[in-house]
Length: 224
Image (tube, rainbow, N blue to C red; front, side, top):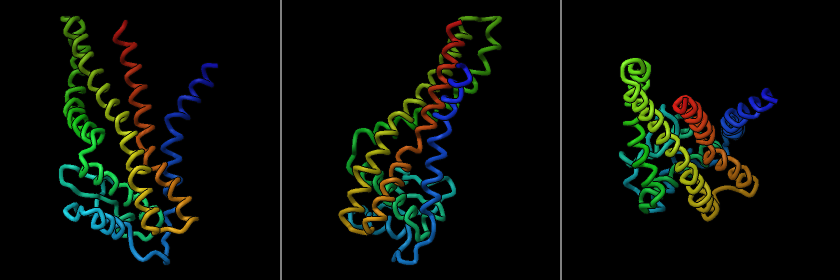
């Protein structure tokens, strides 16, 4: 029974990320019938939305929208690739730029929490290091440092949980309507585009589950 539970947990942690990679890879082949690249699609949609000030740039850090720089950043294969994955992922990231431009609450909350989580992640390793060192001389301080570390992880998990509806909206509230209204893709490609957009939205599921697992482990330790 324990082994079945462990396998179920592993499946929950690993399958979302595996499925996302499979979907994106399946539709990443070059399409000679496409008039432009993912980068071209991003620039076109931004111009159409009146967001010409948003840059479209190459990145080695994974596809994302940077609200600080106001830039849609795409990996080389998406920026210069003429594939269904490139075009759809570009539309998804433009969806984030549109959320930012409209000042949508969830997007703003996620951005603020992400900055806080970044600072807390810098504090957490130090707090974890101090916890056993303080255990013998100052048990109260030791528990406080552990609480700080768990709090940092909790904020990180909260960022992931808030991110999920933000990503879903970027896919199905923004990118999908843009692709449908512009009639950029035929019916067959639109069907596959929905799967790619689902994959783009679910990128953070595995990370969220892993964060929850880590918090549970440290919380059990804290209650000893």
